[in-house]
Figure 1 (tube, rainbow, N blue to C red):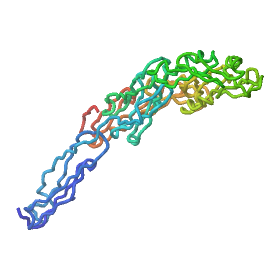
Figure 2: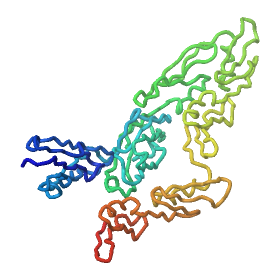
Figure 3: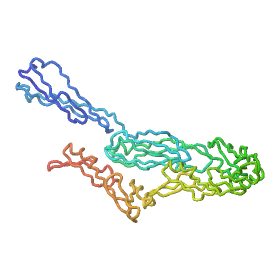
Length: 444
């Protein structure tokens, strides 16, 4: 009905984190009392996968000098649903999904699909560790860092077998979280192809060297077998596929090339004069020519293979630099890591007590820390989720679930209680009624 004085109705949102109401009030006059007015309810976006949220648009009792309307008429509240557009899960991308037996690596970038309400600990594994290795093996996302991409490096491993390309899976699994949306997530499998490398000269170079020739494999794919060649060296010419070559020498090397070849060198006839033939070191061996005898050659294999080590941050070392000591070069891990491998990149481990104690911590979803590698007995297990630490043994991690869920109870004037702070006892928190005239409890 038409009021005798302006009537004001206040409007507000029960939960401003889910929806906002405009305008803040409506005014009806004697002239506009029967004209509909528009109230706009705007959804508020958050990054939490919390499902559809129900809240109320509150209408206050009327305020007017018209006593019929003032404080007597209270329009009904309106129930609104805010539909959730966030999905809990792992989001990943990669440079490429290929590694190689020569140690070539790829990178996978991972983040969460929504903001978690508690920390999320992610484990990284591979289904076949003879084909690939993952680093790091654990990631921790928080409500502040959930959207920041973390990098996982996947490095190809040489299994030492004469096989073709092998496909293995990188496994991402949210191992530990008090956020129900992430604790129940299925593991994510990312298929990676490890490309095979087969240098046939590894097995056949002695056939060529025995004849004073060099071995060459123009195609290292395992599908291109029997493509290795014996190549004539020095002043000789000629080559043969998968067998010793027939080499043509010139001058005095016709009679003396074998003297040089037995030492892995090449014969070179300087001129048409007699007795001036020399044994010459075959690159990458270096050394002065020796007239009429074997030369003193030095071969530092790291001149050839250093890039294979430096590509993974390691150092190449050739302990024996004689031209006949081939294949003994190593990739050594830099300090403070330990490890080495002959003829290929090494698998490095951090030096210190965590090298042997790491699994003690990871069994309970913790991580190992050795603050000083020069002090014995100071390694410790640190909690990935919750608080706590313990030197020399697994940590006793404490997790008060009320830190995360207290607001659920306080919105109804109740008290949150978590009787067991162990990460193994998740979901036992409760809302308890307070006050002398109220009693009752509700689990979680």
